[in-house]
Image 1: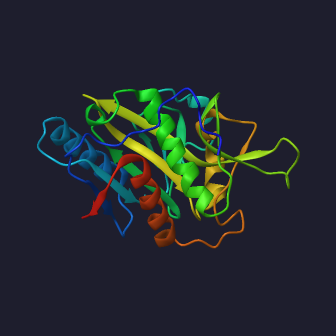
Image 2: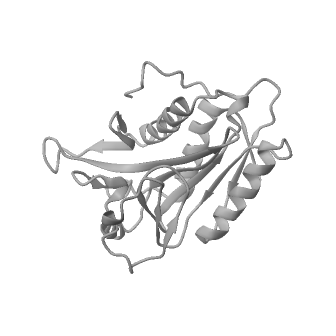
Length: 233
């Protein structure tokens, strides 16, 4: 499963910590609304006033620009709204059919190591894909999760999941996105994450007619393996 051998991926909480709130929005959430709610929640977690939370949602079609975004990578500036995200990384697409999970965890209760945290998020996604019999892999030179595409060529591979986080007072926010059944043509308005040599894929594109509810169930199962118990809110 292509784990990194030099990083401890155990992000279980300190003994006695309350479970992580697991929240799912059934309707698309505007990006600015989500960002404001994340900011408020992260401040309360850092102050010890609120529980940790994972928020699963979909956005209307939009592009976000991380702190390393290159303007030249925005190929269709007027196609969808563009938001400055404040997270690490470059340009990313969000839209219907893509499961976004905003991860608001207090790393002081777990492991105050951002590099290890990113590796644990990758491991969470790889474990989720393995349940669908897809071998997801990480790459040392690119963040995210990748799948080999021998049907496209001997060296071809596509990105199926992205990671972009920010940490404030050791509380994480932003998170991951997993392509379940988005319109892959929408990715053509940007250079996704600055990577030009590889494509983008999804569970459905790989021939798996998976529902969002099925994906959410596996995401929760695999999250709990790495980050501890959750409670639905």
